[in-house]
Length: 198
Image (tube, rainbow, N blue to C red; front, side, top):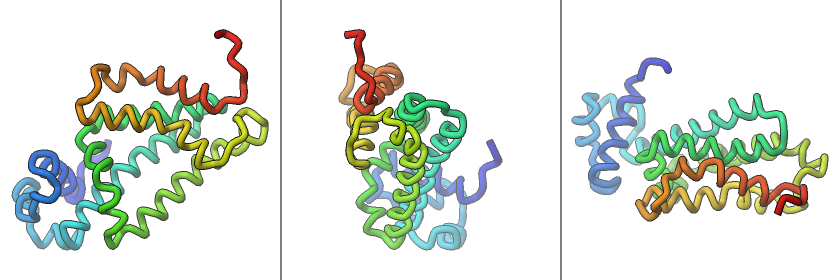
């Protein structure tokens, strides 16, 4: 892992403040004090507090996208690709629970900000890469016939729901303990293969 930049330090300081006192209660001055950066540096890198919020969101979701890209480069089957969508998400959330909690609660805010268009474009590219990775397998008939948006929801929906509950402290089971179960459930829900073991 490379050395942290000043921008990284500011973002991590902002995340710590958001986690401790909430996004709305966090001020630029609090982020400045936590990061050790000057007000000028904060405004230079991010423009304003909303710019910090948007950047923190974009960097976090970008990390998950990078995990997927690396995994897709090595995955050699439809099943591996589908399970990767689940396991990469779980691995990132378990490693970054505060960041994941921030992302889950900040999407509408970022969409309404000056960087909303950038977020929508990033999401479009993200899902395009996923569908591209799965396209060949879909053409081979390895998936049930369904619309693209249904496919995505079936794969990640249950994991997303359990993750929300885990992050909110509403589950008795640890998220990473459900990693393989949720990955298998995702594959079972979209695979065209008939499971004869039941």
